[in-house]
Amino acid sequence: MIIQQEELQVLSFQIILHAGNARSEAMEALQLARNGEFNEAELKLETADKEFTEAHHIQTSLLQDEANGTIPEFSIILIHAQDHLMNALTVKDLAIEMIAMQKQIKKLEER
Image (cartoon, rainbow, N blue to C red; front, top):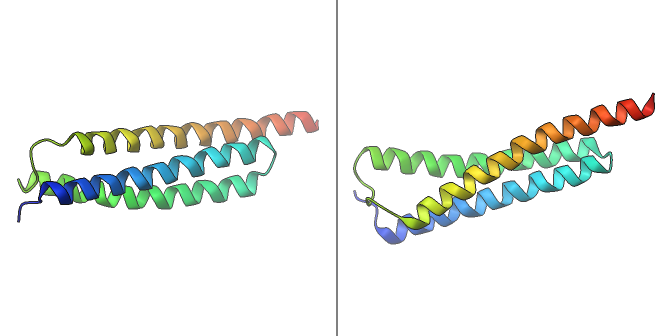
């Protein structure tokens, strides 16, 4: 069954929602780490991962639909959703690295 444009838009906005939530959680993790609250920061990253999993499930389903030829050819909103998802993934990856750096700085300061 071919996905209608309206359904594609709904799914695209769900990706945007979950990606945005994940990005927010990663940014909050950075703020917590800056204050030395590393356990709380890790919990925020875990929450971000759950949001990424939701977005990824939708994305994978859409990719399978496209491979099966059941998705409209072009959607600006879907491209926008993909952009949000990739941006959020980049923020999370950088947050992980920056939190590790914050931990190293704290250890050096404690010497």
